[in-house]
Image (cartoon, rainbow, N blue to C red; front, side, top):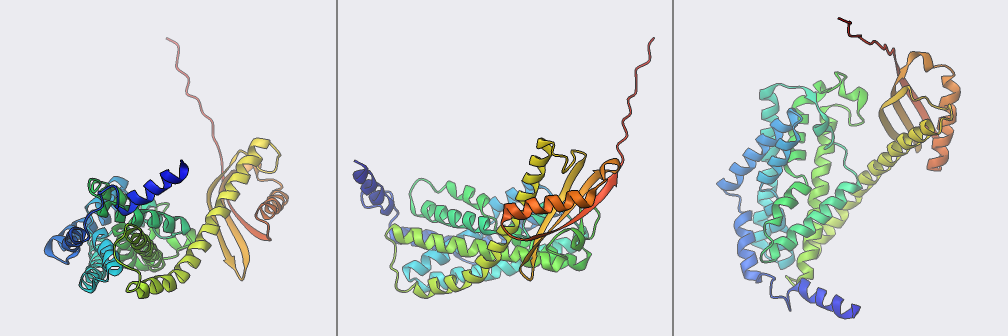
Length: 360
């Protein structure tokens, strides 16, 4: 029973029994039309970039989502994947031209928008696109597979808009342009220099992190799309072997950077989880009068260092050295390696005041 179900699923995937997979000539013409570097492509890309740039500068998530839907950059990436798997050199070159010129176009427009507006404050929406991890690569792989499947099947083309929202292409490139425009003048939403609170440093480093996110998304989409097109019976694996080799070599550097960022995410998660558990257990190790603002982890010569910025009620800051050392030991035990811990505590005073209603 189970084997017959799997067999029907495989047949449905490559379209032999369902009849719902598009003819290769039809799919080729549709993908080629959407991958041409035309006036329509650049106009929609310009509008998407402007929407994304203004949304990023104003820290508006709805505007950024709208830019993802409008942006046509996914089409030439799918065209590049399909042209490679089919051995269609013209489509591959045409799509690559659209991608390369489109990338430069987006960065340039975002750079101009940032300079015209003159804002220098970097919000959470910008920072969220400057530190990609392996999780972003997994999103790109799933999105590329979904986009290729939706393009190749009749009746589910409407899913492509959702795929565009799932994987970010124009927003990270817009962050590259914004970061280059801000340079060393980037300021956090907390009115602190960006280099003082964020591991990406100034605007130039921020632009580098955002470009890494785009490269991650590009590699993930192309690799997954080529695989899905191949599984559905399109093309062959001889000509695209060079493309696969290039993607594989490129991914070594990208994946290493992404894995390091994912490790830091786990470290930050562990610190916050241990802190909450210690507060709930009322161990006296930490106080519920302390509040974590930021956790930052990084490696220096192989040693994992964790920096924590906290708010703390002034009266509860006694015996800080002992508590910090005990917490460092717990964190080291949890992570299974030596850890250095650096605390920055901002002392605060809590004033309770109650205004009583007067009796008439």
